[in-house]
Length: 445
Image (cartoon, rainbow, N blue to C red):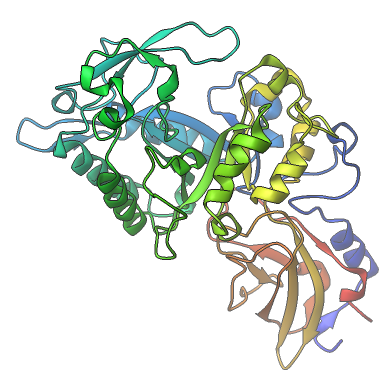
C-alpha cells in the first residue's frame, strides 16, 4: 500500500474502535464497553441530579423552555429577547462535552394558570379546559391555551425561531437539535378526548378547537416553512402526533417539498406503540429514512420506564432495538433511566442508536487515499463528518449517509499512518471523538 504505513497495533486499535450502534451482546447489562457517538444515544435532562455519575455515558442533554423565558413585549413595539437562560443550559451541557436539545412550549398542563408561556400581549383571549392526562397516578389539571385566532401569535413564533437561528447558527455552538411543536408540551397534540369543562363553548367540539386552542393548518404550514428556512444548520423535528389529520398540518402523507423536519415520539414503547404510534410514523412515509429522529421513553406506567431498556421484549413486547431500526432513531430521552440502569448500561444502549461507521477499504493514489465507509447503524449521519489521516480532512462528508449505504471519501495523504486515521467534524465539542470500526481486510501490507 504505497503511501500508507501499516502497523499491527494500529490495525488492532482501529478494529477494536467502537461504533455508534456497537456490537456484541444484545443485553445492555453485558455490553458496557460501548459508547455512543456525538449527537447520538440516550439523553438526560440537564437538571438530572445524577449527571456527575452518568455524564460520560451520554452525549446529549435536554431541556424544555417557555417562550416567555426568552421573549417579552418591548414597550417600543414588537418583542425583546433575553437568551441568558437558554445560553446557560447550552453552555453547561457544552462544558460537560454534551450537545443540547431544546423545546419551547406554548401550552403546558404543569404551567400554573396565573403564569404565562408567551409575552403578555399574546396571552389575551387565552382559554382554559380541564385535563385528565391518563397517566398512572396523574391528577386532573387546568390547562391554559393561547388564542390562535390572533394572527400576532403565529407571526411571533416565526420571528422567535429566526432569533434562535441567529443566536445558534449551527451545532458547533452546542445546540444539537431543536424539537418544535404546539399544544401540550409542544408535542403536537392536545389530547382532545381527555379535555372537559371548556371556558369557551366553541371549543367543546373538535371543529371549534382547531384554530383556537391549536394553530390552524394554514398557520402550521406557514410556521414550519419559516422554521425550515432559518434552521438550516441545526436539525429540527416535530412530533409524530402531527400525523393527526384533525389537528396536524397535513391531510395526507406530507408532499415531497414539505419542510425538512425530522420526527420525535414522546411515548416510545408504550403498550399500544405498535398499533398507535407506529401508524403515525408510517404516516410520514420514507421521511424517517432521510432525517434525524428521536423520542422519549413512555411515562404511561412505571413499568414503561423500569423496563425501557429490557432485552429482549422491552417494556411491552417491543424493544428499543426493534424501534430504533424501524424508525431510524438517533436519540431517545431517557432521563428516568438513571433510577434503573448503570452508566455503562445507558452508554451501551445509547451506542445502538444513530449511525455507526465501518471502514471497508483504504486505497492510496498519488498523494491521496480513498476511504470507503459504510454506515452500519440504524440512522443517518446528521452532520458533516470527514475522514483525516492527521492532516487535512477529506473533500467530501458523510452527512446524510443512510444505514446500509457506503460512501467514498478522498483524503489528502502523504506517507500517512494507519494509526492516524480518524473521523472529524467542525461541530464536535472539546473531548468528543467519533468512534468507528475497521474491517480487517481494509488495510493490507
